[in-house]
Image (cartoon, rainbow, N blue to C red; front, side, top):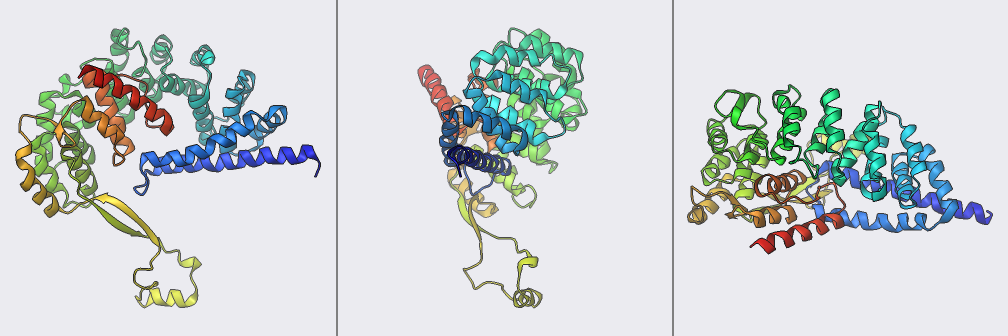
Length: 436
């Protein structure tokens, strides 16, 4: 093997390893696996950087390998290649990738978007904003996601797009993250308010959140009608902290008509009146986990327990004697030797929660709203975001609540790399501590 071939092979191996790590990170985040906490993703992310660095300093040969694999490689290699194009400030290569995008290949679309979200130079902002005028909706959607994630000032472009096209969730989501959204609140209200009755739940949800983030009261119109329980997403209703919404949500749950969203909403509100109601839902198998999470959100009770999850058995991989054991109802493995994983979970046992509440009932006042056992405040919401026990959804909602209720708006997303998240948390902590 000549030297050129040897070096080329090394760079190809870097791309292969990057593809594996990128795919693994996406899988873990999408699964939201209970044996992994959000801070554990950093172990994978720290392994990504050395491979990117090796390609970045690899000169023309590495760049040629990245160009080749951006076309011929899988979506993970495309992600890695686009990261290098960003670091090398090769906008021409990014333009070429975007122009050749397959609108039906969702994995490759996500890979390109992720690379630009994390690695795009600030000098490319005008280019990204210009893509919002593209006739290709996929390209427009990529640009909208990047604008929202990076908080690029594209209020006018997003408003113009939504005024000329059918509503799309990512454009609505991005509009609610614009730095100057409150300056454009009248235009945003005009565009998004009609969508709070939209039949598409995602469009309805994102419209409500973006309106609330823009300081617009979009919930009051619902609270005195049957639309509240039939049409209005309950989580945005909870984040609005409208008193009538709080009463209606509690009444809905007390009537045993609660959905999982209703239980999450009760946890977000954090009122004492919800505690006994939530404990009752622990007895309903399909809602028990959500009820326990909401109880923890309000109380901060350390009622965690280790649960063994046996590995699923693939009978096609078993020997005949093992299949015979299964057929006869015999254990396949000796006691204590079963393959599987141990997860740390909140207890779903009603008696445990009842006993805890009996001992701690006096800590909670009926007129107060709690988070993790303390009166809700920006500090408590910051603790929710930092907690390793908080799921991606709960952390994102805590951040939304900081923006909506307390006007603590910084650039933060749970999709960020852990280091970026920790930097944002540190910035937020500084803002909150200065105001105490």
